[in-house]
Each structure stands twice: as structure tokens, then as C-alpha cells.
Image (cartoon, one colour):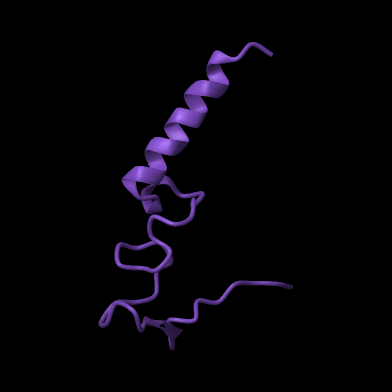
Length: 63
């Protein structure tokens, strides 16, 4: 079984955002705005706009 572990997480707490539980993609997380998450609420506005543009382009193209 594989998995991913954040180097800023220690005992469930984020070391990058003190006082917060580790929640990959939360605002302040090193991943915020850099990667695309499958849960839309975790995506930054810039990433979400990019996803929306790509979706619109796919819908325009005939199959």
C-alpha cells in the first residue's frame, strides 16, 4: 500500500501553519495553489478558473 505524507505534518498538526491540524490544500498549506485537488473546495481560485476553462474547451470540441 502506498501513500503520501506531508513533510510539514507532525502528529496530525501542520508545522507550516501553527495551531492548525494538517489538512492538505488548506489556505497557508505549501500545496495551496500549486496542485489540483479532486475536491473542488480545496483548489485555489486560480486553479479552479483553469479547471473551468479546460472543461469549457472540452465541451466546445466536437468528438
